Image 1 (tube, rainbow, N blue to C red):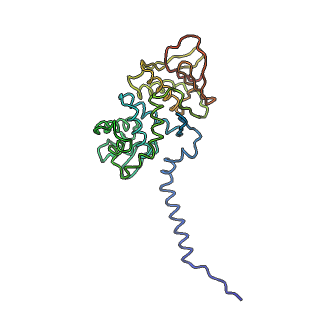
Image 2 (image 1 turned 90 degrees about the vertical axis):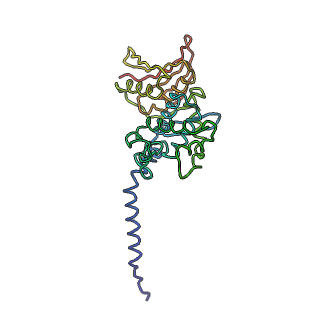
Image 3 (image 1 turned 180 degrees about the horizontal axis):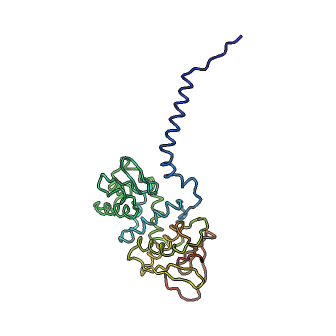
Length: 294
């Protein structure tokens, strides 16, 4: 008769220790991992840029941050190359998310460190402050305009992985070209859920685009007779108008934007597509962002 084999206590203890370690990791690191990657896994909101057959897709959160980075460069009269460098850095450092944690005391879009003189935690966690700080440092790099993207980014970031920025150059360049108006309005489209009317949204949207683009645009609010409202964005520079139109789509997840129009081109939230339409009269170039009725 075969003897029953007794389970070895050490094997059971090892399993319990492994389970405890996994549970501890989940409790400590789980929220951080969700914050960094959860939106990419669970969110259905997406924005895609397509230029010359090449495409790149971001979550709505990432697209919003990319739009701010690009508009800030335009406000500072920096070229698309600066945006490519900044986007490659932000993708590598934070996956284009405004993180409240990081290696040692690093936080924010670019994982800047208060202990290294980048600003206070509160300042660095402000995406606009962090982006301007990045560009401040970039402009101090001798010959940055001619440097390859990964070298320019490394000169600012001083990363332990100096070649990693090159991995994101292609995606960063696509978004930089679209969000700086280097290619016409129409290269970016977003798939977003429907949104309810919000009386405060029009004003906050106007304030955001004014803050991002600064004096490169003039922004007015135009109330409609049917209760709808629109934000009109004007500029004497066609590339800036193209950029402002694309920006308006890239950040639309944060507001109940119904559609974005630039002369005979329109993106509509409801059908997630672009359309061309005939104009009844010559167009005075301006971006018109329409919000739904109450």
